[in-house]
Length: 112
Image (cartoon, rainbow, N blue to C red; front, side, top):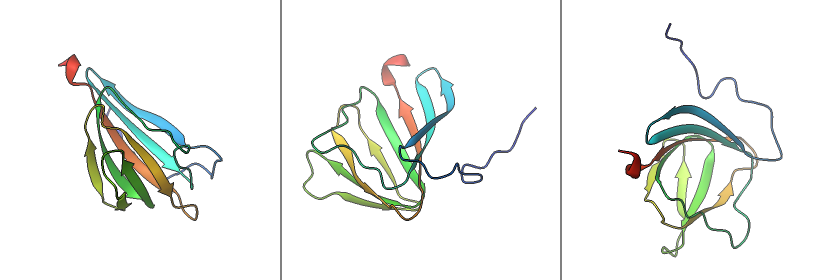
């Protein structure tokens, strides 16, 4: 039976760590909700993922930096970006005053 869910309600209470929740897993695709409260990538750390990732900011705001781009991207509610596989990136900042809610779709093209 189909059910309706809401990615923004309810949100868990504020945490000291980001929350990663897998919403869907299928061959070559994984969908997750990420909730941040002021967290950022550790200094000097870069994600280098083997799969592409498309992210949509559902709530809050953030700054996303790519190693090959001098200026970070300013993300706000409704902003989305495709991060190609192995493109080094990091989260420079998320808003500490409200939850930042990400919808991330990971695409493993080798599984097709």
